[in-house]
Length: 313
Image (cartoon, rainbow, N blue to C red):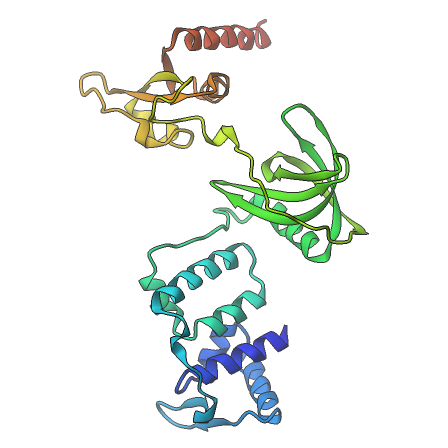
């Protein structure tokens, strides 16, 4: 870790006129004492570092060590910074801090204010289960340790002995890309479907990975505004007071205007998987009412009869 910080210090010092020790300590998230030790090390290595005392002073290197700052455009820098900050939000490794310092010597606040995007993969809550899984599996990937998963797939629940390779974030979910020894092939495992996991002491040799094919997860593609071939139009009715809660499951762009007389509105969309929509809607029956199609309405009625039987007597 220290060698990465030393390289980062060289890049920063070579790219600025002057910088204070405190600014360096803040940038690399270490103490001023650590920065002073690193500067001594660089001096011993033959890099001529100059100290300017007093107000407006700081640390610098002689002109011969300056580098061209125009390799990356300002727009390039903003995009790199945004991506690195996103990575840092899920993995606060010191190497990410060093990389930010090496590639982006300007003040972070300036770059941040200019960026059009903010990427943050961290959880809203400190005790996020998904975040905990991601951190543990990332460590297993870095150490090439096998993992035993208790996993729920579409057809079964079983133990999977896997060699983890990559964490993938797509749309709104985290996935683990791993070689499954049970299936003798690479598989994609959604983290929210992992009941439990055990990082084993067993290590594995790296396999050749080709292009990762991300299969469509139709649970994230239930709704469409377009009437595609084979799709079914669904209409739901809801009360205005429940709008916010419903948007936790259905995008607000599918909402129609509220009827001012009844304080109700309609949700209209097309789907190619009525059964999947039925599963989702059944969990919101206190918030929405099925208007059409008739087969959807009848399916919900049948489910209600079954649920009533669970609590009968």
